[in-house]
Figure (cartoon, rainbow, N blue to C red):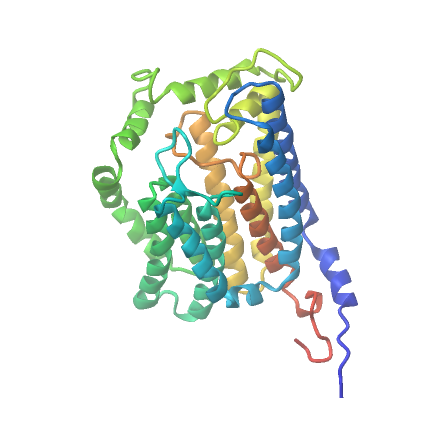
Length: 386
């Protein structure tokens, strides 16, 4: 006999329980980004921005918001189980960066974009999303044996694959993001504190190895100028000095968006967009943006506590790691307390791929938050009980 599957109560419960504040906060940031990019183009503050940038950002906002809602309505367990479909695609796109299709942005020292003719894509952003699902799925399969050395070794090999690939691209900033995701996701799943102590003890050796054998002269120079400011004001310090000058010019309430004596900063639409936020909105506006970014991180952490299992918690904490590390490194870079490393500010910096990827990450967080009870699943079959 044919059963009728009613999903209406589940749909109602799902959209009632969705983290609307989190969705509102990220969309507020994304909408502000569109406005900022349009102003940068209209006011001709920097010649690096054209009319397509704010349009791409606007389209990415719409597609990202729609994708976020779709992903949030699907049980994250189902998405993770199909890793064998999307993981090869993500790795294939990353592999294309090593072909003639790959290129690096002007002034950057990495090669992590591909030009397909009709669209430019940053595959590492897609790889973050894929790693989030595959690593959480892997963790869920070994949760009870997580602290066994062999199982932990396999998990670290899993994490080392995307981390190594982006490092070979020269994208050390994204490699750090993958490392942060790995640490937060493992501890959310119950990794022993003793492993943290062991890892901390090995950090001096790791830092020495990276400094000696991984970093080039430019990377080492960017760190040295932080320790000795003023030694290279027209070279490695130039961009950060301009960024600070732009922020200072905004004073308390900013120059506004309708014109002013703006300071032009290289990559002002992208990695250094916070310098324009400080210039346009002043100290008060910059603090408001920082508070909103902190609130997003706290909402994600709060949602991780509501997740029902290790996979859900790992997904949420992986997204928390992405947001927190991006925010910390980007703001530190612009404020000249961290080296320039090419890390965008989530939901603010220009980039359609990054915008879509972050929205889908938020969708996964909401999925983990809302699907912690079977009755709230959109496609829950009450008669079958699954």
